[in-house]
Length: 205
Ligand SMILES: [Zn+2]
Ligand SMILES: [Zn+2]
Image 1 (cartoon, rainbow, N blue to C red):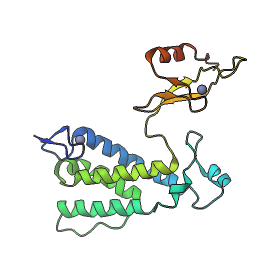
Image 2 (image 1 turned 60 degrees about the vertical axis):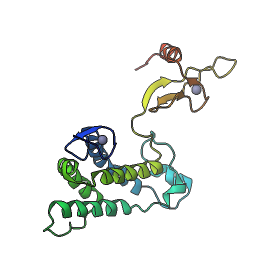
Image 3 (image 1 turned 30 degrees about the vertical axis):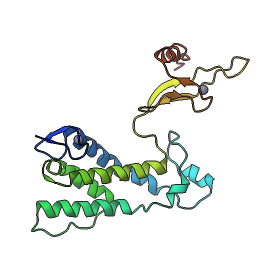
Image 4 (image 1 turned 90 degrees about the vertical axis):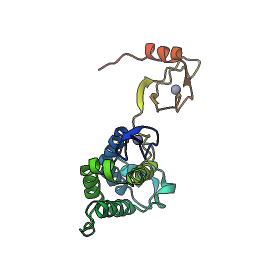
């Protein structure tokens, strides 16, 4: 019995990664190629209009241009390629280094080998940290909310004397209070959330 080398608190049995960390790592590896493909659609130096056109889907927040230039987009593939070379050297010391490939190929390979990595690769936690950092870096740029935001309907706050309802879509992020990004109304207590539910406008569809 040993502790997971990534989260350092769950039991990992004989392995280096616990089941939960291994699953999360597999999910991150699955999402990384799309995330970076989206990044490459973002023009490097542009006016706002072009950036807006290039930004996919309305669900994304505006792209953070300040950090965009600071990031080397090809770096992600190189980082995972180096990690893959290290894993292969541990597992098959007689074979040569892996052929150079793109990010998607490296992510696919790492996912395919993840069971072995979690069980036998002593630096599995380092791979975990790298993948986490690559995802976080990309999310900073595309401005996506950290993973699963929960939709809670629309804001029911009355914003003027005429009884106008704010109506902005509300989302809850893990570990944060529900707060309207427009009128700043907060829905903190259970009672607040029940009222919010109760006063949702009826679906017209
Ligand atoms: Zn763990
Ligand atoms: Zn509001």
